[in-house]
Structures are given as structure tokens and as C-alpha cells.
Length: 322
Image (cartoon, rainbow, N blue to C red; front, top):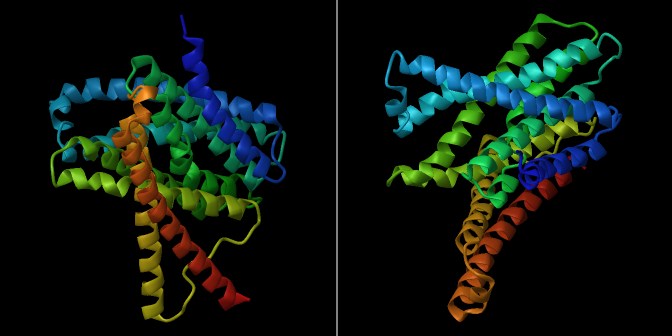
């Protein structure tokens, strides 16, 4: 029997995030259609799981696939050849097939198709959450933090697909744009999974994990930029100067802000993981209390510094254009 509490914990965070994007989107489709895409996304997650299982069985008949994926290089190969293409392919199909039937009756807007892609990705996330919870391989906190990740993976091809479907004159270059965007999603998907698995390897590969949260922060920024485009809003400009030296300086500041901000979030994530097994009475121990307070302030300082750099770049760009 399905544990209802696990099902709720798996579905509620993605549904809340979907509701957030639904409220932000102009001319949003009916909520019932959006929930339909959410459910189709969850079904596509089970399909992807089955295809990955079949792929590994076939691969093991030719090579020792389980032995290959134990190394970081093997993990990267698995993500690029198996996980990324299958999961992003199933999500893409889960948007394309229902949209094909809907566009016979309705003219789908760019923003509508993009929102469909987010709904499918979040449904996929809900399915993945339930699998992790059912097998006890991840905590509720860890999966809640990772709620937007599949949406961030799929945002490029969701944007490209929206351009193609909503266009009156569908051009061949738009189809190529979809493939390039999908390939970008596959590579980002693989890279995130490789960086997250680097935590379990010895030094110096262990240090690769510190690139995970800065990269996730950049993907979240990209998702927000694409969302602004489909909303008809101008994108936020951070790099604006025409001189090469100044542009390199601004790019360096953006990279520095991503590293600081991403690892500030990473530090808070690790802090919660360390203190979550403790009993509530332990929190009042002087050593534990000081550890929590000092780590929180340190990561808060780096986060504020990253935000200050971001505000400086935005202010400079506004002053330049206005």
C-alpha cells in the first residue's frame, strides 16, 4: 500500500512551486490543464526509470556497466549516455505529445508551452521524490531543496519548444533550436549529477562538489531570465560595458558572486545535514549552539557579499542605460 505521507511530501513542494510560476505567468492556461501536464510528467518519470533499467541490462550484456560507473569518469559517461538523454527525452515527449493534440483546438502561446514544460518537469520531480522516499535514500529536506532542479534542466528546450509551437510560420531553424536546447539540457543534467556525486570520491575529486551549488545558482538565474522573456519583460543585464577589459571584469564579478552565493547555500545545506540527526535538547549545548551560530553567520556573510556584488552590477547597468 502507498504511504500517503510519503506521497504528500513528494508532491506538495513541486505543486507549490508550480503554483508560484502559474501566478507569475500572464495568460496562464487553465489550472486543470496544468495539473494534467504535472501528472503526465510524473508518468514520464516512471517511464524513464523503466528505460534506464532496460538500458543497463542491455549495456551489461556487452560490458561490465556496473563496474564502469564506479569511477567518476564512468559516472560522467553514464550521465551523458544514459540518464541525461533518457530523462530529458521523456520529459520532452511528455510536453510534445499532449501539446500536439491541444494545438488542434487552441492556439498555444509561447508562455503556455513554457509553463507546460515546467509542469511536466515538476511532475517528474514529484515521481523522483517518491522513489527516493520509498527507498529511504534521501531526506525530505534534501529533496525539497532540489525541487526546482528538473525545471531548471528543462527550461532551455521548454523555451525553444514554445517558440516553435506558438509560431505561425514554423521554420526548420526553430527545430534545430529545439535540438540544441535539448542537448544543452542533457549536458547540464549530466554535469549536475556528476558534481553531486563527486562528494563521495577522495581528494582532489572531492573538491568538484563545491562547483555544484554555484552551477545550480547559475541555472536558476537562466530559468528566471527565460521566464522574463516569455513574460515579455526585458532580461536583467549584468554585463554591459563595450570595452573588453571592463567586460572581463564584470564577468569575473558575476563568476565570483556565483561562487560565493552558491557555496553560501551549500554551507547552510551542510549545516542542516549535520545538525538534523541531533535531538532537540542537544541544540542548547554551548558547543553545538556556537557551532550553529558561527557557521550560519559565516555563510550569511558570503551570501550578503554575493548579493551586494549582484546589486552593484544591476545598479551599474541601470545607470548606463538610464
